[in-house]
Length: 603
Image 1 (cartoon, helix red, strand yellow):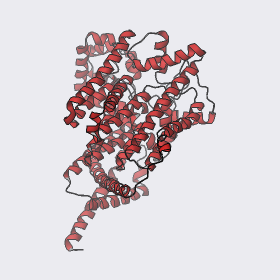
Image 2: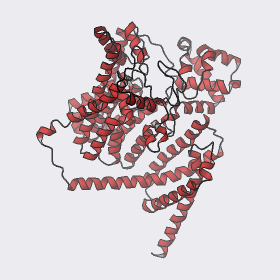
Image 3: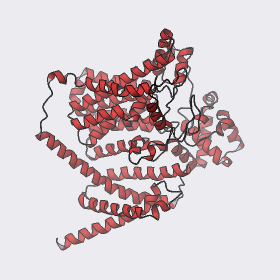
Image 4: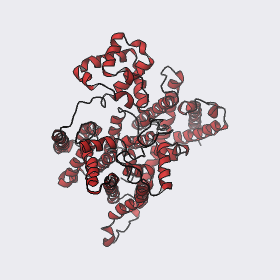
């Protein structure tokens, strides 16, 4: 090696030493060790961490292109967001708030951002090379087409396999997981008195099936079971279509088999397939929309020349909006992106988006009018402002004047404010006075703005504490801990509802399997298993999807970025919601095989 080569290598070694050392020193800031910091600092474990960091950074610096400015910018933006999420999240999980005056936080932010940026760039380069090698291998090896008599059944086999694998769980938790507003939705149909708090399309579907079966058989349980079976059929059909799409796109058989097994056995998938919550049908429609966007991106001319594909796009978008209100906002966020990306077909795309919105408003508005559904609720849209006012009132009441307090009590009475909890707004917003707010909105918005200018960090902490489970991977989902519902009290976890609400009851046939799902739902058991626990974490699967988005942007595969952006636009709407639960971001689990195929260079 020449003298210049030795000098350059020495510089990289010195840089790696400094970055690895600084990163290791800052690691405790993103670990939940605040009760026992010595568990990391006064431990030989930290030495192993430092050696691994030194090796990884040194190898990365010598392998990546230091002059790729664009790549560095994208990796730095991802690493900055991830580092901030970890630094803020660990403080919220341990203490319930972020102390923005903590100097250690602002030291760790740039240090860990640099550290993760280097590792992310190296990982992206490795994935890029891995994908290229896979494409070359597949180009040399041609897999023969299956016989025609088998090929025509190829898409049906996964459908029946999934139903067969879900059957034991269905029998164990019979008639299914009738939970998450199920009682309220059924009651609307039973009393034939409706409001727009829940999507009317789902209210009629759920309540209609349960009541119709009950009228003919006298069994509410059988009605709930029929709805659960219908939803399982729809979900199995959606997953089978995804597998068919992957096969047609040339995704390897190994990934498709893993995808099938994942859909068949992974508990989060099975839980929500057998759960009455509207989130499942919403997510299936969203999954179809992701596939439609992939088709649009890869084969633009063929897509806009096919009436069937364009109709499917409109249908999926409208269905997504009909089953969850935040679907409307997520799709609206995506419209400008779609129009910019598909500029060559902007007229047709404008018509398609307009048709989707028109279908939604006609169906939803028609149902509301025909059913005389009551409207006028504002608290769902005002969840964040409600939490911000409630938090400031609890911890900084001195910033409220007597007039401010009187104004606040007009929309949020004292008995609501005393129930403020940082992780969930349900108890506070339940007593929000919609009539008073509707009578003089500007008065209350001025109050919110006035208090916010006095205590801006309290407002920031109120929002972070209410949403951090969606972006902090190490979160324990315990937002309802200690809350009693129909048939049980939540323990140290409220990951999943698990129960059967009235008018049904649990009549399981496989007790040991039912008990396993109960533990997964309301106890901390899965969180105690390293690595495996991350597959259950809403924050971890979000960062997995974000990693894929930034990677495909880095690779300039913009047709893959569009469906990723749609999934993340749904996430943007739920971080403004009442709390963090896995059901709100179910798309990250349903779409996981798609994201994995993108990373592997298979799409």
